[in-house]
Length: 501
Image (cartoon, rainbow, N blue to C red; front, top):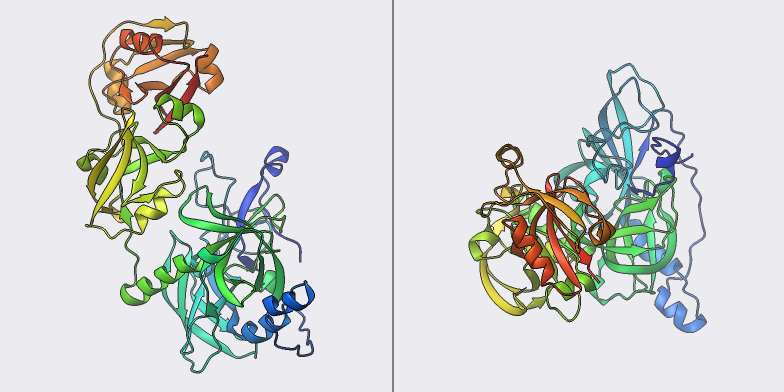
């Protein structure tokens, strides 16, 4: 069966589309052929590798393969007259990540079947994988595998089938917990992904395209990988062949321990192309425990928007090296604002734990309990400062907006920066909810090279708010070889490093 992909144009087809590894089957699926293999000696890969230099995964598969299950989730999918190979994603097509990380199956609007349709509802069956974590029937899988499912069926390797109850599903982490009514089931062994290293062998077991208990192997390509729109999971990147249907299956290390849940692939075709991503099992276990205990997951929230650092930004803020998370906006009235954080602060540590970059901060904050006090270490005015922030709850998150002083001055052009700017009109301030800033009318030279565009609003220079054209000219005149401009573009605030040299 060929992979199904959504292709908008020849240009779009050339853009890498990241897909989860769930699989959607139509009504006329032919059951996957069953292959019976002889039993192998129960030797763990690490032991085999020590003797031969080449890992032998047969012992791992024989021992823990029976704990890996096939999951069938029936959905009701809305058909549309202009369907392509997959239903449209409920996402704004203008979103810059529209072509990135659409779920391959199990998400609303991603049913199976061919093109066309009458607009009527009809059932569709999504297939995925999972693994048993307790002998009394608790199973871990991906949330997108069972999302909006009417009936979830779990099939074991010995062909027993059970109707499963969805205990809970957390879309933020893409982890779901199922429960089947059974006892004395085979279970996997849980490992510690923190002890794994890039370059080590790993093994995946799952049901790609419906082929039950397929075993593939590879190595860990990277750790703590941050992906677009997936802010709270430090993914394990591997080159293990993972395809639609592998979603929710386990990722094993050489000791036969589960260190991750296979969740996504990054592909131009819908099939495996060398990039697959797994949710670290320690993160998934935290979610599992919370879902079983309370039915939901509480996450901490700081109330800031952050971006990565580079050497130019570091130079602008007087830092020796680009580290930490640069605060580009602070939610008014949010936890960070109440604790004294400001745009331009660089968060370097949270409760004494270093923040290596902007991608690590969201998961660190999310792991804190709402209502607790946290020590946030920031770099401000070329020095380090500790702030106390009471962590909020993620579910209360609001969109940040910018508020500060007033504007004055006339339109003017700064030759060194290369921009022509003017103060915002009262109407622009009202429409854009801004009380300050300079509108960029033209951009050239250093500003254009840095990506500044007409229509951007300059809010601050090196973290200092800009209230007039003359102030901007003075700041640029006395700056060194680089500055960091805080701009508002559409509804987002970002720092843009500008090389003035």
